[in-house]
Image (tube, rainbow, N blue to C red; front, side, top):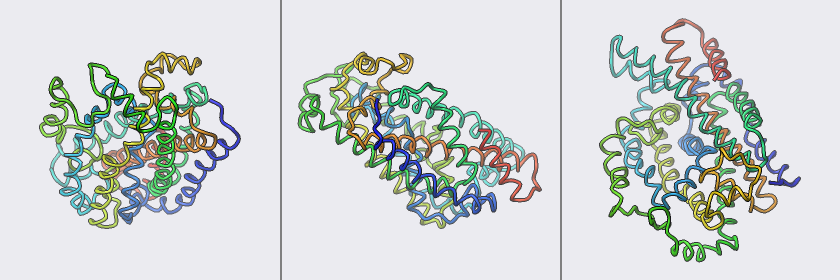
Length: 406
């Protein structure tokens, strides 16, 4: 895909607007671990809420939703919409309690709720398991999506994409701490949402789609895999008990206690809890999670869904995508790549905005995971089990080193 000079200017400006303010957060974040990992517990609800939404909008999210829509229609999204049942529990039962606990990380709470060597062992194990191994797997999946997008847009090799996003994200996460992450997230949220709304608008306007009326008319006459209706919002449980179990049984019987999906499990662990712990009051913690749930489940998915539906008409088969992008690595070809493939139809200027938005989407998630993972490894493992008597600046320095290593 060719980017004009205007596109490059807009993309560079979008990235600069996001990251330059974070340069001024390094000194403040370096004062203590409370500042570096919890922003001094002084974050207003709207900033914490925007950060939650931005963090869960990563570069792989539009691809994932597009893949779901192409395979299972709009109703397929109930595999994650069903999490709203447990997400709401976080709003009304747990948000205030997290802020009231005054812990720095959710893992620290284990030794408040429980006692003895068992509680310490669980805290230390989960610090390593979640902060290092699980965290790296999540960041790998996010960066894989970035590689797919960059391959479509620029024809970049995977190592080139990883080198660029890696250096950018690590430098800012280590320098600015959670304060920088929050500021970057706030700006990125508006850039990303503007970009994806523009992508949906121009996708619907394509001649192959014919506007909303054309989209509805054409897809109503089509049947997807297994005879599904692409436009059904509610799942058809008549011949699909697997979907019924996924929507109604698993969230209540299993997911509420066993799933790891920040913001969805009751209590909202990991980096969602980090935002609640960083809020300046219990009321702000509740407001942040309430805003997140409304934006996450009700507002934000529809631009992605519209692009996914339009892509069915533009690229009915995966071979159509391969034909449109002959230099695409066949190993990266899948229904998820239909989203970046649709971006070729954006007009000049909006392509640059989308590029800046996709860089922002990658960064908002990776920056959070770097800071959150470092908080576990430093506060819940290094400080708890190895060096318990260091100064605050020593632990901040350790956090920056761990961030780079992650």
